[in-house]
Image 1 (cartoon, rainbow, N blue to C red):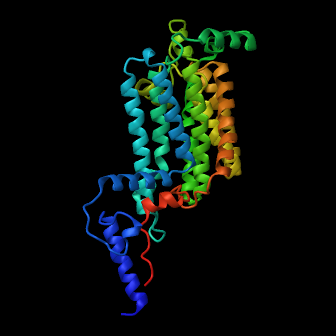
Image 2 (tube, rainbow, N blue to C red):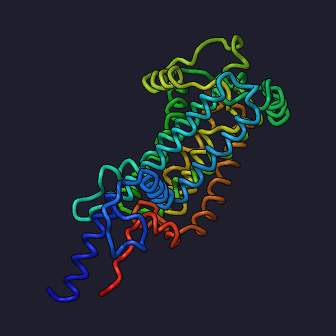
Image 3 (cartoon, rainbow, N blue to C red):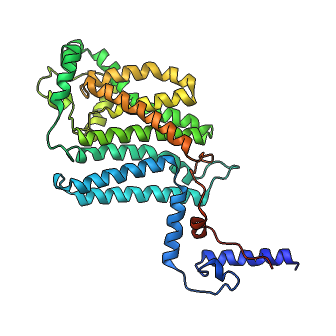
Length: 365
């Protein structure tokens, strides 16, 4: 066996021993003594690997969880079960890190397509957005004990001379109701359609950029909602409507969604509008033709949020602002980050971190 083959064989042996926890440090590489597996070292290695596998989206998501957890600690007296909320935040953060680490370990086989871990790594942001929205029902009075709707009602009246949701009721008709509910429903499709196109085309950097725009926009909106609680016309004007908005299948679908997932509060800014704006700007940047397809639907969706009694006009304007800020800040963050070319959002490791994640090489003999 020549020297090159001998070194290669020793290096493979050492790598196997290292992965089994039999080697404690690079300095003992030449000796390879069978020591017991180190749980601490394994945990540190996995933690470092998960941390390194995080991309820009994860830093925004984990940052939001960190900020909201700090707010929960500071204003714990305003919550019923603050410990449970922090525990849930930690759990979600761990799930994110596990997904990133699992995807980094499995990788992507270009010959057969993405692995299942790759799929979940790319599409879990939608579940994260849903979790944050539903959680707002418990965090809406985190800082302010009362509702701030009177301020927005005054703004709407100053801007339009009426209470828009109440005034629009005079135009209610089953056909118009159905169209507005359809327009409201399109919110759920914008990010899915744009993301699916970029995912299918394997444009990973663009895909994660779009998710980052949305994450920043939503995070800004959720934090504002904690500081300025608004419950929406649906609750404020309850009892003042002359009847329900009757319609067809889309009306039934929206009624079912609202029945199962309606959040009391967190109306300002409108997260529907913010999410739609982030996706719209993402289409402008990454699929210009899709921007022009989305534009009329987004415009109708914004109007529908007021018509179907879920938002004030002020909520819509604020959602446009936060969604646009999400795009601007997200672009800035993506420029400063390492391109996520393979969909795993893995970044360059420092030498200290790499020593925990990768087995060192055997010195040549």
